Image (cartoon, rainbow, N blue to C red; front, side):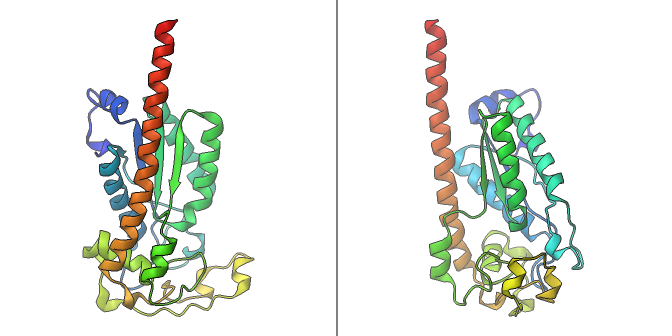
Length: 256
């Protein structure tokens, strides 16, 4: 359910019922000629919506800006600092806790946000330990990705506008993909790029890190559905544990 469409008179009871809020977070950045600037937002938002359906959770409005230092000089990219993201996420988390949520799941569509998300989760762990925080970036997909991939990854960690991410888009937001413009990117990635700040224009002129022409909706479906299974299992288990803990706490108070 979309949190933003609720009203203040009815939402409190629903928060007590659902207990979990899912925040999609992405970025605005270059994704080659075949994908839109908001690719990461679209992926995070639609993935979060499906996860909410499987876990009976609220979906918060998308946080659309991310840390895109590496791609900030490409046309259309908008960069915010890790510090800004950490502050925003911790403020949101504390506010959710005050409203009655006890599970806060961040569905991330942009790898560049990972550092900020992890640090924000640690801050919230210290400030509001009763709030269970998850930061998801396609968990549980390593094996299935290797199964469907037709070309080797350009990098051990990065996945950008390539065969895999374009397949995600074809499955989740295919109406925004123009496969007639898909290209085979050829990044020049050296070991030094992992050891020193390296703007991506030094490695690629297209921001496509692989062969996007090999992307298919079917590949995207296999990977995304696997990730949804993993995320939904985590959240549903967390909700079950929370229900048991709250029932035990309620029983204890009655005995007192």
